[in-house]
Length: 486
Image 1 (cartoon, rainbow, N blue to C red):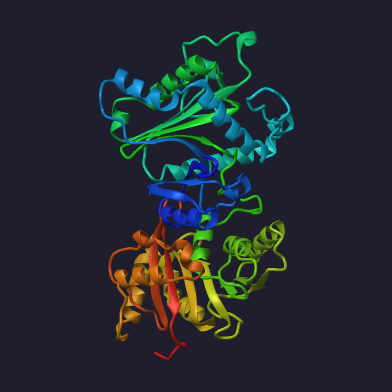
Image 2: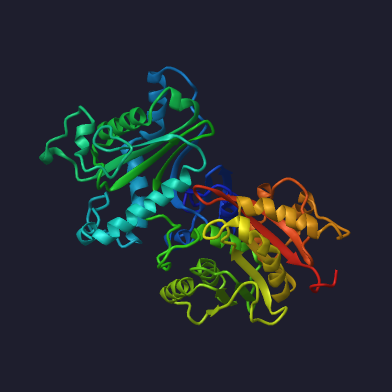
């Protein structure tokens, strides 16, 4: 097992699965990479520090089971089959817990390796009493759950002491959720757990998440002698059953990977920002611009991953620039990123001075699309002006802007002799061998239909991604000649 590595899976925002699959191969040397909506599984022998370095993942799990979807039968037979996915001999769980304990040791969780006890210890008491940390954790977990629920709707239950409701923030005693009596304190083993179950699709019409969680929890208590604890367990067991697969895993880190400790004020989702930067083909010595940088999330993510490039951010808002400055300082990137106050319509920068332009176009969020959509051609022309020949433009557009962008590029391309189809773009990406190879294999994300040029900017791919409550589109363009030369 040590030579081949262990099996893991990550959750990912919808549309980011191809980016994540490529990342685990490139960053971890992962094998047996498989992806389904919302998840990517793989085998890797990487250390915890390298696994924590995944930039496009939401959460990381130690994979225990990845099986076919359950057959629809009677409740009793289905519950028996579900329990067989989780219940193993105690020696199996000792091995699993040993791996889990190793990862938590890298998080700073109290862990006395000299003790004979094979089970992990509780979290440090000061961490449990830190109110600010709890609030931050709760907020991050809510964000992660929101991302995971984009993929498919389904009820979710966290099983601790018996069955509970979906809310884990309830102030009620969790033991009230079940008619089962809680064991006496002096009889409880030192190791505690809870089961987080998500059930969707056809199986959800037969069994509820509460029923599944209760069955698994009761079986583990009898088999391993563990104590169920909803509020503060040592170990959480994640079970997801749907029409595609049956997955069982253990989260290896308490906080999601998508939450960056170096981002003081959150703006664009960090996983989206990283995916955009990975498309920009950033190389050592390159000059990268975000002309509508906002809080600077894209610049920070790019500078963390490709530190040998030079980064510039511009924005017309003083408050946004102040927030970006705080994030840059928190990330320790003051020597990597320069900020300036300027309008994206008239950047005080020389022509053909940047190798990549990356930006989240904020229309439809803080501005009215009906009024300011007319500025989009001017913005594209200014980006085209400051970009060097051979450089790339990567934009994040809302659904409304995506529709309007198609109209703009069609009008701009009416006089152009050539258009590039989806197939041609995919072939170009597959043949590419530079840093953008992080997303090779992501051609499934391309949207159907023909794409047209905008001036000297040739389309190089469109990717649909989810921002949680809404969808967005990542556009990639390449500058093939000097502006105005076509």
